[in-house]
Amino acid sequence: MLYTTTTPAAKRAAFRAELATGALLRLPGAFNPLSARLIQDKGFDGVYISGAVIAADLGLPDIGLTTLTEVAQRAKQISRMTDLPTLVDADTGFGEPMNVARTVQELEDAGVAGLHIEDQVNPKRCGHLDGKAVVGLETATKRIRAAVDARRDPNLLIMARTDIRAIDGLAAAIDRAKALVDAGADAIFPEAMVDLAEFEAVRAAVEVPILANMTEFGKSRLFTTAELEGVGVNVVIYPVSLLRIAMGAAERGLETITREGSLTSEVAGMQTRARLYELLDYEGYTAFDTSVFTFPIPAHPSEGAE
Image 1: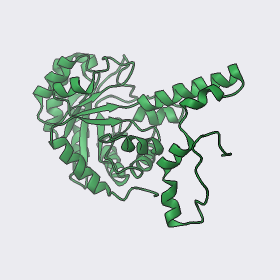
Image 2: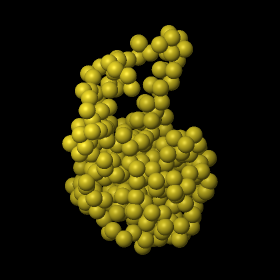
Image 3: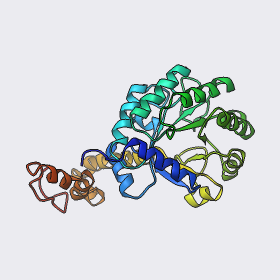
Image 4: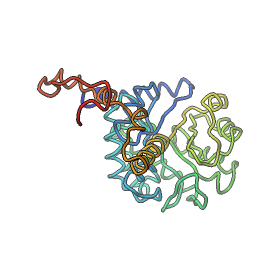
């Protein structure tokens, strides 16, 4: 009922422990707090909070228009709804090193288990689009040092993302990954790798965990979890997938209303009222206050009014 009773500190410690096993951790992206509950219910290892999704939810492109306040608020709303660790996209840290330090503490207070900071210039863009630019090595490492120095819980994971592969090639990405680890990064997010061999090369170059971004319509094909685990990837994210699935279904539903005059043909594919109430834990609320939940849950969404 209400929010998770698992503390942020406990989730961070658990995340660190799972990463230490070397197994591949699967983190689908939650587009709202309820979807985070669904991710947990389906047995995944963690929840990813995508900057692109936060921007899209606000009707904005992923070009650095969202603010720290907006990201921290959404990160808190999602993190408090799940026992799983959450990893949040902190973009470029929202400014210079002092801003990065504040970003880390705000997101730590929001309850996340980890965050990643990238080496793009501002305004940034989606990591799988062309035309990106990255900052110099000194600025990139300063961001990571500031992040590491600012955290108060040593278990808060500071991940460094580098976008340099698409600009200067794999060798440059490996060199930058090594430098970011030397600056204190706990993990590396090499963005826009084109094949498994590139992930394997990054894996061989650093001793910290690495992350693979399996975003649809990106630079690489969608590798299976077995393929990624086979080359030593430690974390895989599906950042925008659930949002794309949900928005695709919503678009089809609206078209069905226009074409058929009702949603009758779409009902079979909808989440039922009973399943929604299960995820919301309606029965937990009646255990707390019997005046809240005093009605039977219909088994079919067509039974009863909203």
